[in-house]
Structure formats: C-alpha cells, structure tokens
Length: 156
Image 1 (spheres, rainbow, N blue to C red):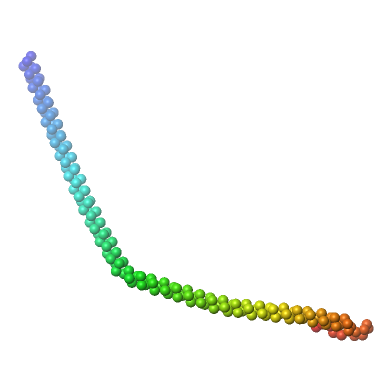
Image 2: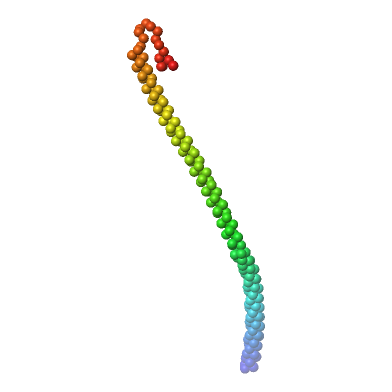
C-alpha cells in the first residue's frame, strides 16, 4: 500500500507542480501584459501631454503676438477714435446751430403771422363797425316809400 500510495502521492505532487508552473507562467504572462499595457498607456500619455503643451505654446505665442500688436497700436487707435468722436461732436454742433437758426426764422414767421392775424381781426372789427354805422345811417335817412331806394352796403 505504501508503494502505491507513494506513487499516487508522487502523481498528485507532480500534478500540483505542473498546475503551479502553469499558474506561474500565466501570472508572469499577465504581469507582462499588464506591464506592457501600462507602458503603452504611459507612452500615450506622454505623447498627449507633449501635443497639448505644443498647442498651448502655439496659442500663447499667438495671444502674445495679438496682445503686442494691440498694445503697439493702442495710441493710434485712441487717436483715431478721439478724432472720430470730435468730428461727430462738431457735426452735431453744426446741426444744432442750423436747428436753432431755423427755429429763430420760424419764430419770426409765427410772430409776423400773429401780427397779421391781429391786423385782420382789427380790420374785421372795423368793417363790422362800419356796416353797423352805414345801416344805422340808411335807417335814419331811408328814402320815402315809393321812391327809388339807394344802394346799400349789402348790395356791394
């Protein structure tokens, strides 16, 4: 029994050693695969960081150039803007003066029209007064019945 059980024990031990070696080989392959993948990821990360840094440096260069251009042209831009504002203000002042002149002219016309209207009202009042006086005179000095009637104011 001990011989047979020794062989069985050897067989079992041999199987355990084979399984352990396969497991070790699998584990080594898994570790190598994981290591390779980590290395690939690390390489890709470095590539992405370098690309991002390159693009950032280009953008910073463009931004710096734009800022320098604006800073160098700021006096010219300010002067041009100031000139345009002055021109606009002068134009508005001229329009205001023209409007004030036109208002004075219109006010003169309004004043003349008011005086003319007052004169017309005075003439109408005088004409009305004259018609009443003429009617009163005609009433007082009316021709006798049967004689030719004289011309009255209403016939004119």
